[in-house]
Image (cartoon, rainbow, N blue to C red; front, top):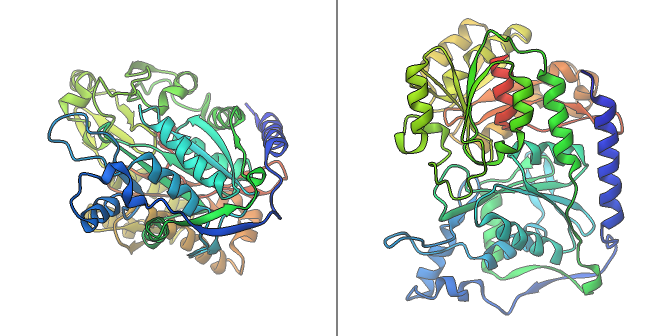
Length: 458
């Protein structure tokens, strides 16, 4: 069914709502300030005996691919808190203040820009998303709070709603005493030196602040169109297109994928059973970790079902639904080998297609890609680096087709520009340009596990 007209209407409605509520502060005055409250003086670090120990705890939240730390100490022996809400505020303020150098050129947030925040349904995520939003608003950025949303919904909403960037607040697949933030800005996933630069600013207690409180960015909620657009995209792509002779069971993990339970029920004609299809913020039925489907504590029901029903694939998602798990007859498939049929299809469509492999990739992937006349490209481990690689591959593909501008190539050849990449840890990426309300094709490489599950089974 063609939902395109409805989707375009939803985009326009959402953009109108956002414009009406945004702060009109694009030309307002601001300063780079040094906050007199030292971030290392936060009570969370009070137990550390020295400033250097406080700094070590603080810097442990700075990861290579995202921001992640301990937000609660729920049991004796657990690590102490090193990611207080004050740090989430400062991260937002610093993020809004920095001009980042990226492979796509400089990217930044300016007063008046729109930034989206999604989150998982964990017990800490609402407060942490709120603190991050406060920091961004202090620097004059308008923030749209999507609420509980899978990563795919957030990333696609950035393109669909014309936002400058987005953040996903999630602990992903780990224990509830941990939480984290993943950042997208100007079509670039921030990682490595970008994350370090944010923490450098935070440690120096610096950020942009609007001179007048009246020029603070707005914090906007109630934009439900992002969910509706995503839901209709899934239905447009897959409803009525999956084989009824292919039964599946689906473990939603008690996380953000639960939001799309009814949509999946319409797409998959033969769902034998759902597991963990109700909100479970505290993971009382086990962690949503598709990398370890065979962990009896996390997936007891699904594992027993898989062994008893070896012909029924069990599909699963982590909390923010950016990892896709597949289990058949109790066996867990990893992302590298799971991608083989996708790579075969992709290379047949575009001979010479590059496939990115790293030190964890099964050797059979490289052998198969070469056999199908594709190209293996070795790169460092990391899902953010795969996304960067996909951007660079698109530039090269455009150049090979005679274009000096990748965006112009996408506008002229949106279907040919579509591509997939995957990695061992079950982050499986798709770049699929879609029309926005102005008729332009937009998009970015997205690890949307819900979309990938549907595509893979189809």
